Image 1: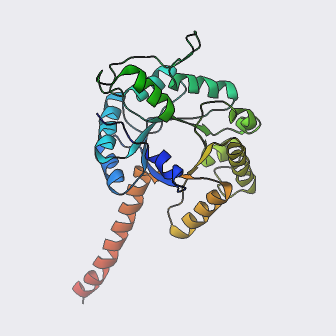
Image 2: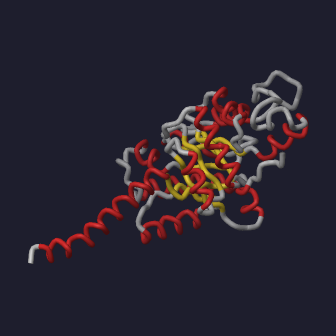
Length: 277
């Protein structure tokens, strides 16, 4: 079997930006749609989404078939879930609520195979997983490839993480930092105000710390309307983001349905008036 492509790495290596979608519904078809629409990656959201691991496997198959890179947003720091998501074929994990360097080190250990012959925590090694194409890959080559290409993104979502960010970003094995604007605004007592100057300052602080250590910054884009989206994207580009999390299937579907219904209502209204004449 040919190795899975890491389209994020390919985009960044070429000096570009990677753009992907968050998939919260238990829908392989939505993964296919995202890939068919040109998404470099999909985030299969097992934290806020509605899928179990067997369904995640089907969504990973859809990503492989359409040629987009898939990561799994795991529900917590549990090493066994991180390992199972990667064994299922995810090319990376997105880990929520990382607030200090100790947590970050544990997350990285759960995503990497042991290579020092010691007893330090690591990802469980099994050659017959889907990630290794069911025992058809040569183990040493697969393990090396996996450790080189597996991405570990951590979400910074709590006020307490701000004072720890300089130590978090120094943890070896991290691939990217994801500032979590909405959760941070809640944790900072800002009531979800995404435009608050204190939040904007915190997001810049997190991004600068990540870039200083050579880590990628992932920008979660939350705006639905184009003018606000343009401003939001410009903010993140100025902050040094190179990976853009462009929205979730739930949100985009809701926005599209609302707009479509409103458009149909506008089309119906003149017909109603002519019927009454």
